[in-house]
Image (cartoon, rainbow, N blue to C red; front, top):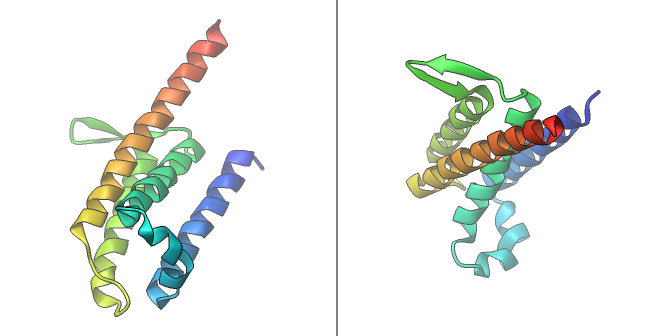
Length: 130
């Protein structure tokens, strides 16, 4: 089995664990020291979800689909749908709250880390030619 699939599976399991801890109310005590950092929650959304998009796109070999007139990374689309549903589901969980700024941080992370995956892939292809 390729290392990229193992890493992706482990990272997805980590995200699921974080969501489980957040939904149960236990995450707050785990990250309490980090909450002193300004905008820690927003940076967390940006990096955790962005990296999720990165690893899923790499695992899917940067596969694209055509949506309307645009080519979109399939991994990014999958992460957008899942994280949008997850954020909206927080409105129904007593220990969580829906936050549009969190969702925006998710989207910005997805965009940035998707471009990073494309850039690394392109750079790798150029390096292999020389």
